[in-house]
Image 1: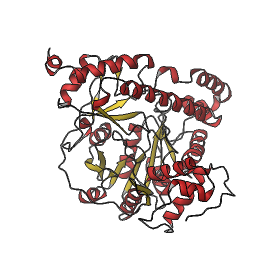
Image 2: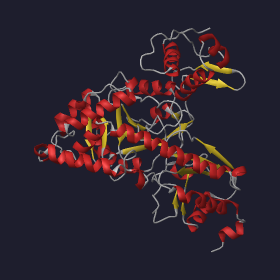
Image 3: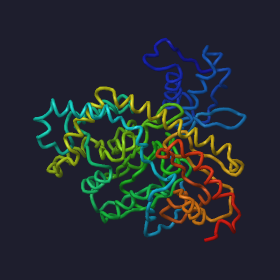
Image 4: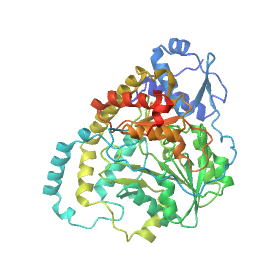
Length: 474
């Protein structure tokens, strides 16, 4: 049976240390693909640990794809080689147009932060201090990548929270990810073919198409984007969100991640854009490690934003470029000015340096955890409970809700709008023909006021449970 020493834990908890030991054994081949892991009870007894410690370690390994489970049989080491090919699908020319939101009683499509969660007093205090102590710097032109204190703070945050060893010089700060996408297209080339996830966030292909570059919708399977289709469709740059895909919630396992890195390494000029947009909000286990943290060939461009964690109105995002691309950026695009004001940059740098951001994330995680649990509780105790299936609820700020109904999605969305609810179906997020996803709805809960949730679910029940004739009247 597997045996490990726990005499030198360092700062790790017991389950984190065990998770790392088993992971290392899988990576170095000590545990071969298909090898069965000990049962939780026998392993706990052998190591003199609690069963919950073993369970947490297995859960993290399972989430990252290092192991898989077979019901009533146990856990097995996964094969972390390249994933299987998929059947191609013909692309459609245009992305779905975003609907106007308006003032809805409850908006299940919005990922905006709730107004009551922003740390106004702390932000105002830091802003006053920055104005008092950084007056000369506030009047200077910011470097193209952003002010050094902010990039240093971001680098420290990435090392502490995401296990990423990056230099401040590799970081470029910009006013929103949309702006950074435009910089990347200029840096990597308009002649390149860009691939996006299908289904996926519709703004991303719209931005690529607006920049007049070739964009391909690449189908996904249960492990993430299909590598065979990247090759078949001649993709050079692939844009993915491997740690929590929107909208399906898929976490790309380690085997597929190594496959993607192998695909990128096969040819000069291939890169992976890793969009880590809501990595902070994982409610079970540790955050999933970034793809960039296992990239040794300088093929991953890491992107993240503070709009999800602070507020969408603070347009501060950043990307981490491989060293050779950073050199190219300075040579060809160093004349650009940073698009974020020095006032905001220095204030955010202090917010990170002084530990306010970490405390804020902990509060937000608790807030959103409660939001999710409240919404799920209302659904569980509603007349709709026997007709719904909840999926991918352990991370991010949304989950999927499958509904047993024969009514077309477009009619359901129309009736929801009539009751002042804004909803979106999974079928709307396909850039190609939707192979499945009918009657599956994306339930975002970050911006819904807690006091409105009960009434919102009551209206939702009316949408699905009223007779067909009543629904279509008017």
